[in-house]
Length: 213
Image (cartoon, rainbow, N blue to C red; front, side, top):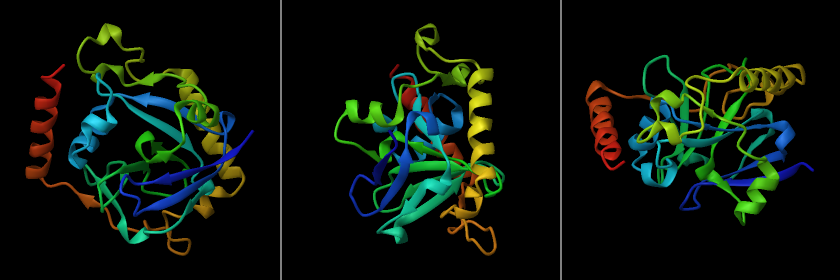
Protein backbone atom coordinates (compact mmCIF):
# COMPACT_ATOMS: atom_id res chain seq x y z
CA UNK A 1 0.00 0.00 0.00
CA UNK A 2 1.41 3.46 -0.88
CA UNK A 3 2.53 5.51 2.07
CA UNK A 4 3.86 9.00 2.74
CA UNK A 5 7.44 9.14 3.98
CA UNK A 6 9.03 11.92 6.00
CA UNK A 7 12.30 13.25 4.62
CA UNK A 8 14.69 15.40 6.57
CA UNK A 9 18.25 16.32 7.32
CA UNK A 10 20.08 15.00 10.37
CA UNK A 11 19.71 18.21 12.40
CA UNK A 12 16.03 18.57 11.50
CA UNK A 13 16.28 22.02 9.90
CA UNK A 14 15.26 20.84 6.42
CA UNK A 15 12.05 18.83 5.93
CA UNK A 16 10.12 17.36 3.03
CA UNK A 17 7.63 14.60 2.22
CA UNK A 18 7.61 11.80 -0.34
CA UNK A 19 3.95 11.12 -1.19
CA UNK A 20 2.48 7.79 -2.24
CA UNK A 21 5.68 5.76 -1.93
CA UNK A 22 5.57 2.01 -2.53
CA UNK A 23 7.95 -0.68 -3.85
CA UNK A 24 5.99 -0.71 -7.11
CA UNK A 25 6.36 3.03 -7.60
CA UNK A 26 10.09 3.25 -7.08
CA UNK A 27 13.43 1.58 -7.62
CA UNK A 28 15.59 0.80 -4.57
CA UNK A 29 19.20 0.23 -5.62
CA UNK A 30 22.71 0.42 -4.25
CA UNK A 31 25.19 2.47 -6.28
CA UNK A 32 28.96 2.02 -5.99
CA UNK A 33 29.99 4.62 -8.56
CA UNK A 34 32.94 6.92 -7.94
CA UNK A 35 30.74 10.01 -8.13
CA UNK A 36 28.31 8.86 -5.41
CA UNK A 37 31.32 8.07 -3.23
CA UNK A 38 32.83 11.49 -4.00
CA UNK A 39 29.55 13.18 -3.02
CA UNK A 40 29.63 11.53 0.42
CA UNK A 41 33.25 12.58 0.91
CA UNK A 42 32.50 16.13 -0.23
CA UNK A 43 29.84 16.33 2.49
CA UNK A 44 32.13 14.75 5.08
CA UNK A 45 29.68 11.96 5.91
CA UNK A 46 31.18 8.93 4.15
CA UNK A 47 31.06 6.74 7.27
CA UNK A 48 27.34 7.42 7.68
CA UNK A 49 26.33 7.09 4.01
CA UNK A 50 28.61 4.48 2.39
CA UNK A 51 28.71 0.80 3.22
CA UNK A 52 32.06 -0.94 3.67
CA UNK A 53 32.42 -1.31 -0.12
CA UNK A 54 31.54 2.32 -0.91
CA UNK A 55 27.90 1.68 -1.82
CA UNK A 56 25.13 4.26 -1.39
CA UNK A 57 21.54 3.10 -1.06
CA UNK A 58 19.21 5.15 -3.28
CA UNK A 59 15.45 5.14 -3.88
CA UNK A 60 14.59 6.33 -7.39
CA UNK A 61 11.10 7.80 -7.69
CA UNK A 62 9.06 10.45 -9.47
CA UNK A 63 9.90 13.99 -8.33
CA UNK A 64 6.23 14.81 -8.79
CA UNK A 65 5.63 12.98 -5.51
CA UNK A 66 8.12 15.18 -3.67
CA UNK A 67 6.67 17.91 -1.45
CA UNK A 68 9.06 20.40 0.13
CA UNK A 69 8.41 21.51 3.70
CA UNK A 70 10.21 23.75 6.16
CA UNK A 71 13.80 24.93 6.02
CA UNK A 72 14.10 25.31 2.26
CA UNK A 73 16.67 28.08 2.78
CA UNK A 74 19.01 25.19 3.64
CA UNK A 75 18.46 23.40 0.32
CA UNK A 76 21.68 23.30 -1.70
CA UNK A 77 23.08 21.39 -4.65
CA UNK A 78 26.42 20.69 -6.29
CA UNK A 79 27.98 19.14 -9.38
CA UNK A 80 31.32 17.39 -9.49
CA UNK A 81 31.69 18.59 -13.09
CA UNK A 82 29.99 21.44 -14.98
CA UNK A 83 27.67 19.01 -16.80
CA UNK A 84 27.46 16.33 -14.12
CA UNK A 85 24.46 15.03 -12.19
CA UNK A 86 22.94 17.54 -9.78
CA UNK A 87 23.38 16.34 -6.21
CA UNK A 88 21.18 17.87 -3.51
CA UNK A 89 21.99 18.28 0.17
CA UNK A 90 21.16 20.38 3.22
CA UNK A 91 23.64 23.18 3.82
CA UNK A 92 22.88 23.27 7.57
CA UNK A 93 24.33 19.85 8.46
CA UNK A 94 25.45 18.60 5.03
CA UNK A 95 23.01 15.71 4.85
CA UNK A 96 22.76 14.18 1.35
CA UNK A 97 19.23 14.39 -0.03
CA UNK A 98 19.34 12.98 -3.55
CA UNK A 99 20.25 13.45 -7.17
CA UNK A 100 18.52 14.60 -10.33
CA UNK A 101 19.43 15.50 -13.86
CA UNK A 102 19.80 19.19 -14.67
CA UNK A 103 16.50 19.22 -16.57
CA UNK A 104 12.95 18.44 -15.41
CA UNK A 105 12.18 16.80 -18.76
CA UNK A 106 13.47 13.44 -17.47
CA UNK A 107 11.51 13.15 -14.23
CA UNK A 108 13.30 11.27 -11.50
CA UNK A 109 14.87 11.91 -8.14
CA UNK A 110 17.19 9.42 -6.47
CA UNK A 111 16.74 9.87 -2.72
CA UNK A 112 19.78 8.97 -0.62
CA UNK A 113 18.79 6.74 2.30
CA UNK A 114 20.30 9.16 4.83
CA UNK A 115 17.43 11.64 4.39
CA UNK A 116 14.59 9.10 4.59
CA UNK A 117 13.15 9.15 8.11
CA UNK A 118 11.47 5.87 9.15
CA UNK A 119 10.83 4.42 12.59
CA UNK A 120 12.63 1.16 11.87
CA UNK A 121 14.36 -0.93 9.21
CA UNK A 122 11.15 -2.97 8.90
CA UNK A 123 9.12 0.16 8.18
CA UNK A 124 11.63 1.19 5.53
CA UNK A 125 11.53 -2.26 3.97
CA UNK A 126 7.73 -2.17 3.78
CA UNK A 127 7.71 1.28 2.22
CA UNK A 128 10.58 0.90 -0.26
CA UNK A 129 10.77 -2.83 -0.81
CA UNK A 130 14.05 -4.77 -1.03
CA UNK A 131 17.19 -3.51 -2.76
CA UNK A 132 16.66 -4.66 -6.34
CA UNK A 133 20.33 -4.74 -7.25
CA UNK A 134 23.69 -3.05 -7.20
CA UNK A 135 25.12 -0.90 -9.99
CA UNK A 136 28.62 0.23 -10.98
CA UNK A 137 30.21 -2.51 -8.92
CA UNK A 138 33.53 -1.99 -10.70
CA UNK A 139 34.09 1.00 -8.40
CA UNK A 140 33.46 -0.97 -5.19
CA UNK A 141 36.13 -0.88 -2.50
CA UNK A 142 37.70 -3.79 -0.66
CA UNK A 143 36.96 -7.37 -1.71
CA UNK A 144 34.86 -6.95 -4.85
CA UNK A 145 33.96 -10.64 -4.90
CA UNK A 146 31.85 -9.93 -1.83
CA UNK A 147 29.87 -7.21 -3.63
CA UNK A 148 26.54 -8.16 -5.20
CA UNK A 149 26.54 -5.60 -8.00
CA UNK A 150 26.71 -5.42 -11.79
CA UNK A 151 29.86 -3.80 -13.21
CA UNK A 152 27.64 -1.17 -14.84
CA UNK A 153 23.86 -1.61 -14.58
CA UNK A 154 21.80 -4.73 -15.35
CA UNK A 155 19.25 -4.44 -18.15
CA UNK A 156 16.40 -5.30 -15.80
CA UNK A 157 17.13 -2.28 -13.59
CA UNK A 158 17.61 0.01 -16.59
CA UNK A 159 14.27 -1.04 -18.07
CA UNK A 160 12.52 -0.57 -14.75
CA UNK A 161 14.08 2.87 -14.31
CA UNK A 162 13.05 3.91 -17.83
CA UNK A 163 9.53 2.65 -17.16
CA UNK A 164 9.28 4.73 -14.00
CA UNK A 165 10.45 7.86 -15.84
CA UNK A 166 8.12 7.25 -18.79
CA UNK A 167 5.15 6.74 -16.47
CA UNK A 168 5.93 9.95 -14.58
CA UNK A 169 6.32 11.84 -17.85
CA UNK A 170 3.00 10.58 -19.21
CA UNK A 171 1.28 11.64 -15.98
CA UNK A 172 2.73 15.12 -16.37
CA UNK A 173 4.76 14.86 -13.18
CA UNK A 174 7.79 16.47 -14.82
CA UNK A 175 5.80 19.72 -14.51
CA UNK A 176 5.40 19.22 -10.76
CA UNK A 177 9.06 18.90 -9.81
CA UNK A 178 9.62 21.23 -6.82
CA UNK A 179 13.38 21.30 -7.47
CA UNK A 180 12.81 23.24 -10.71
CA UNK A 181 11.11 26.56 -11.34
CA UNK A 182 7.80 25.77 -13.08
CA UNK A 183 8.04 28.85 -15.28
CA UNK A 184 11.62 28.71 -16.49
CA UNK A 185 12.55 25.06 -15.89
CA UNK A 186 15.70 26.22 -14.09
CA UNK A 187 16.98 24.65 -10.89
CA UNK A 188 15.56 26.40 -7.82
CA UNK A 189 19.11 26.61 -6.42
CA UNK A 190 22.23 27.38 -8.43
CA UNK A 191 24.57 24.39 -8.15
CA UNK A 192 28.07 24.70 -6.78
CA UNK A 193 30.57 23.22 -9.24
CA UNK A 194 33.67 21.91 -7.50
CA UNK A 195 36.99 23.53 -8.31
CA UNK A 196 40.08 21.53 -9.21
CA UNK A 197 41.40 22.03 -5.67
CA UNK A 198 38.13 20.85 -4.13
CA UNK A 199 38.13 17.78 -6.38
CA UNK A 200 41.67 17.00 -5.28
CA UNK A 201 40.62 17.27 -1.62
CA UNK A 202 37.72 14.89 -2.27
CA UNK A 203 40.03 12.45 -4.06
CA UNK A 204 42.46 12.51 -1.13
CA UNK A 205 39.62 11.80 1.29
CA UNK A 206 38.42 8.91 -0.89
CA UNK A 207 41.88 7.32 -0.95
CA UNK A 208 42.30 7.65 2.80
CA UNK A 209 38.86 6.13 3.42
CA UNK A 210 39.46 3.28 0.96
CA UNK A 211 42.73 2.39 2.72
CA UNK A 212 40.69 1.36 5.77
CA UNK A 213 39.11 -1.44 3.77
